[in-house]
Amino acid sequence: MLTNRSRIRAVAAVGLAAAFGAVTTAGPASAGVHSDSPTTNARPVAVPLIPKDIKPPAGSKMVGAYIVVSGTQTYTCVVPAGAAAGAFTGSSVPEAQLLGTGGRIHHFGGPSWQSVRDGSLVTASRAASSTVEGAIPELLLKVETHTGKGVLSRADFINRLRTSGGVAPAGSCTAGQKASVPYGSIYVFWDAPAV
Image 1: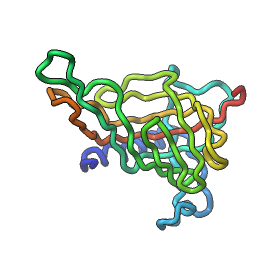
Image 2 (image 1 turned 60 degrees about the horizontal axis):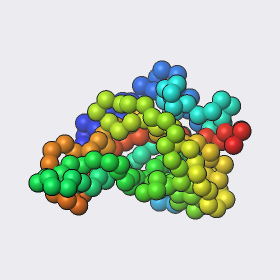
Image 3 (image 1 turned 90 degrees about the horizontal axis):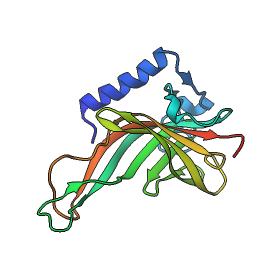
Image 4 (image 1 turned 90 degrees about the vertical axis):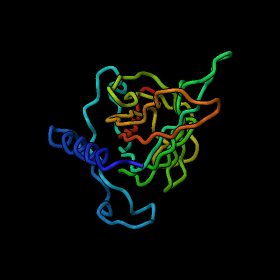
């Protein structure tokens, strides 16, 4: 669960991005309507500046932008052979709910992203990363598979930007122990012309 301090940081970060000339995508006419229907939960999301080492290919067009409204990165404790205690090392498994220009997206292990609105699904792998102090890295991911027609069917690349939290816990742990760490981010999906 996000703390008030984390929420304030996330709101401030998005606000700063908008104030310093970030691009805002236009949402549908229903963007201001709030209900539980996945077709009316679309909202515009400010896209922050993208570090040059994780930019999508030149000429890419944005498919949609989404903000994590609730999310965790889950780590599993690994104990080396012969050691008394282990550490939370290796990759994490995401579990997040995103909200943005195309409604709601469920992000989960794979890593995978699935539209709640139309069921379209993509999986992706890391293409490049950019370190963020005190948070999981910002990423450029290349989409590997598509399933279904819909909002994500044109996505070729994904940026994970404006990350906060999500870092593996420090200290020792016991084999198989899991730790879920809250995180925040903005995900931007791109249609690359050459892919």
